[in-house]
Length: 339
Ligand code: DGY
Image (tube, rainbow, N blue to C red; front, side):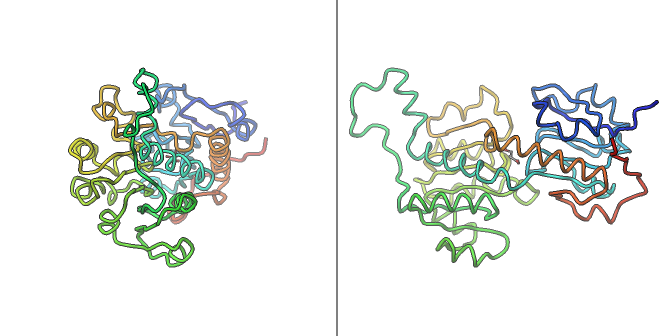
């Protein structure tokens, strides 16, 4: 008897209980840990794959889709889907799922942590303490920036931007923001002002990025943008690396166009060990850990599993980035999931 359960290609090893909602109803082919993406072993099975369970490091290209003619759903365990050719999925009538909501607080926590770390030079001070450079209580040593009364400019007032504003309010910061659509309610709730990006860059003591990576936002923060910022300003990026021009940022940090940066995302990613940004004491770098809390990652996997199951059955995904996929649906038969 051939196995008729749908085949799910999971690109990266995950704790078994994170995938348990799928285990009973589907055949799972799970790739190795370590970010290898579509290994030759997984690629061999694209032809029969019914669903892809992907991470943000796995390019889901036209070529991959071409080789997976039975695909019913792409389920990404992340909110950002810039690694997925969403337009190509839509043309093929394939819904693309993502996992917003559950990582809002975690990502805002990390972004705020980077803001504090860069403002108060925490990693630099720790390195000095460990290296024996803490020789006295130095009245002029490790001086940083105050948060209280400072202006935070939030670029992109989506869920994570709002969560960042909430945290900033608690620290006595003034908030300005830029966003594609007007948000009068947010202005009211946070006593904040919505301003064009250029004004935000000029006026902010801290700038925090919370926008997706798209053609429009690629290198949004380039040399010209960095030059508009205050020399005392601190840039925080927990969104996507390529939103910032890395070479321009290096120049900005070394030439004093801005004071410091806190980066949870970089371009490229991972940032190679020999990259000059690591040598800068005014640049705090973490390895894309915005959503890396036990609960958040487990819940992201849970939603990704639910999106797989919904996609296989032709139901509405919990979170779908291309609801227009339905207009392109072909006669592809959705497999039965009865176990
Ligand atoms: C996402 O979900 O896009 C985040 O970058 C993961 O931390």
